[in-house]
Length: 267
Image (cartoon, rainbow, N blue to C red; front, side, top):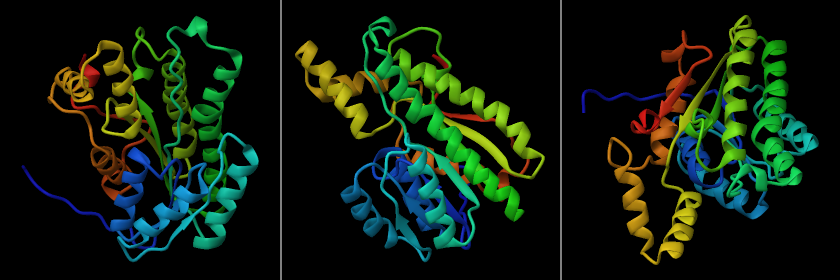
């Protein structure tokens, strides 16, 4: 360890979409530990309630929940209004919610799967950003917006085509809108993930293990070996990157994609 750092987000308020499990939950916990106010979101009301109770114990900030499917524009509008009414102002948005279609080839995907993937992974991020950035502009808040994307958005071949295309769109959206928002002091960036220890990745490993007749841990170990650092990412790895990009230590970073992938982006 070369050095250590800490963050203080007391008085700041953040929306984190898709934050009842995996990476999103890790990000929510990280902000709560820094005493930020946090809004928890996912489609499951019971998961939101449970996560709010868990995260609320971690810091001095206020933690609230708003369940709902963010592919629905009305849900997005209600979510943003709830955060502003509860916290008075919004200074941080983390667009984390995403879905992972698992078509074998893109040609096999239906238009319904395409629309659903783009609706959650791209359109919802755009509309959430539009509403939050409009609030920041009108309130004179030099806020921070971080989009969670994936290395699949950089790769030109491989499986998970719909998911990859949606992340390519998120990357382009980040570049384009970052330049516009920077004129108002709003800094937009992205964090790009690779294989991360989440229930989704374990589920995919289970499917791969069953098809090969080997233990799940064997598949997970093989996947980890393919990453230069020799392990998969953890939610805390991504959360630390988000904390950095939303802090004053990243004041001069705009329109960047921080690849938190253990070197997986080099493969």
